[in-house]
Image (cartoon, rainbow, N blue to C red; front, top):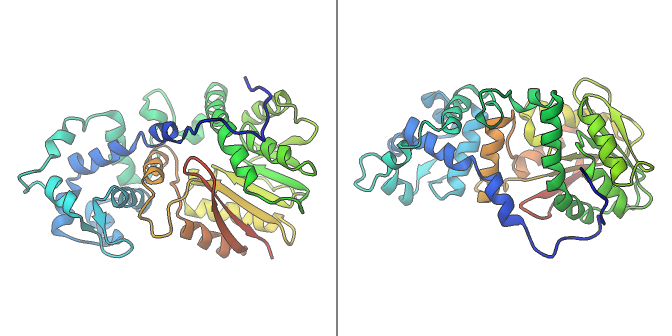
Length: 345
């Protein structure tokens, strides 16, 4: 159950290291899959290649392959991005079968782990696996339509937001704005944080059933029902409200592949007034796609359970500009997260 607290305070200690254990939990399985199932490093050692050649030669899909290559670059196993990928000395000495120091059997002993097996399926099909690789569970987007799972997942994201949301709100100057639309806003913790820091600001959470009911209860429990409302709707299939001059996507775009992200940004551009602000709060890969390692590891989790990944700063800037936005700016917050803002001219 949510409880009232002061959104303007932060904890005395930094939980980032704890977040990283959870966010990076799938990275080891992606490495094990590449070593033990694909013998990827032996192949690449003999065939330095670009991403297109890697995909066509090994039968991989672009999105998960990009996540894999970014992770291995951040791990110090590959170099050469954004062109031809080569092994580093570390990978060549320890992950190639012809090396006397090869440790492939060490990873092969874990290759039948459910998440490791699912990684291979995701790499080859591009389709997300079931939540947590559980046989009795669906992929995340489908599972969210079921009440029990939706409550559990929303609670998980809410407790994370208690730390992330105030830090996000502190980075934004919203003094000239009047109403925020928190798109797929879950429990509403981010909308409440914006309202707490900006007394002039109202907010609306856009959520589909059954999460919309969870959102209303959470907002009421936090004492923001007079300033934060919930609008029931599907962000893809329903029109966006047009009375908001801020659109917030907090930990949302990373769940979707590039065409769906472009679709959402296009809808926001159409709905926002001139001068309207678009805020993307998420974990972002650096522009060169060489790290940081905690975000690259988190992207492995997202690649497995959703249709998305962690986008790079450059990828997000290009998507925003293609949608018509201008003045794209980047700012780090906490726990490997950041905000990217842009405006409608």
